[in-house]
Picture 1 (cartoon, rainbow, N blue to C red):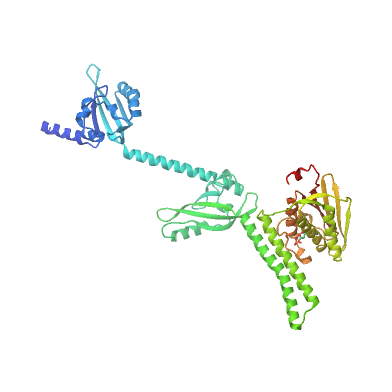
Picture 2 (cartoon, helix red, strand yellow; picture 1 turned 180 degrees about the horizontal axis):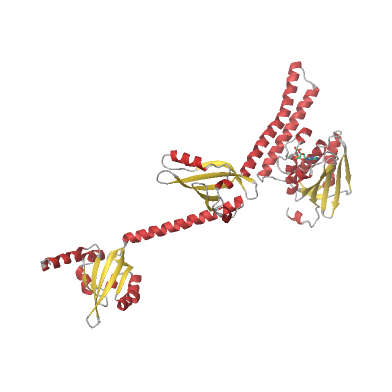
Length: 487
Ligand code: ADP
């Protein structure tokens, strides 16, 4: 056995005790400190004398720590003889807290009476920071999960081979598949034209890591229908740059696409419609220049074409106003019989076969007379435009209860039943109408909105090859009209 210099050993142990990277303390059973090492002295910011003179271990702790020490920790220590790694906060003299983990062992006299408590305190600052970081990450992960769950965009993750791994509620809504039906299946079943392998190649070439790939494509719904979608796909790569998984954010763009289509149709139609009268004006003007004189017929044609152009532009502007909900009406008490008769007279005055009938002498309504005139003009123009044989058109005014009605009845080409629900949509024209007559498909859209702004509605009855009846229904103005009370 090696013979050691006992004094050297004892001094070395004392050095280890004093300068160890943890705090050591010996206390009496009531907590009074009887020995502390330098590390603990440093942590408390007090002098060793101060500590050993009158301080109890629990006095070094924060208030909740002190309460816990006296009510839980010390009784447990008495009971078990030792307690391991309990978190406390040590309060320094400058009040700054220091998180520590305290382990303690109780020493007793040979006859079992508690005599001393030996405590080891480990600085838990790093651990606390780590725990806090962990907690923060957990909250972030929970927030992210909540965002994914509640997102109105479909969020999907897939494996590198395209197998669906996660599928949020919006994805279920968009494609019509509940998660249980799609997780584990291939992405191709919902995005048949999306090529995952091109994504891997593209992302590998991007310096600084993968960035989302954006594209518009077509998705397949559970009922077999297709849907226009835009998707952002972000690849997750492994250490060797291999594709590990893909996150996709998918958004329904069918409305946007429909709008784009509508815009394109609108541009094609308006430019065509506007060019016709312009061409006529130009043609007649050139004719007069060539002949070197004014021609009555050409001037009439120019004025008519300019009027038509004016009407088209007016309709476009009014439709834009309606769309922006900036329609201003000046509603005044008016006689519907008189307004409808004036409209009919205007057409018969031009030699068109229009008849007028009224069961009432006077039918009071609230109306913006100019706008109402425009509605009747639209309906009458259509009645003639879409009657190839120029049959009679009848304007009939009647009253049913509180409804004042003006029906414009033609015996023209009629409207196919399938088109009736779309008749009042912006820019809608029944297929083949363009061959029959010019138009922007705005007249009925405008008319319905104008009549609705009068608190009324338009009813259509039509049979193909038999004719159509468009009936404007407005509330009759009575002295106790609730409608009147708003004015
Ligand atoms: P436009 O006449 O400029 O095309 P409208 O909005 O007035 O636009 O009418 C929309 C479509 O409804 C027309 O293109 C036509 O196909 C159909 N339509 C309207 N009125 C009649 C009618 N009286 N008879 C047959 N078809 C009609």
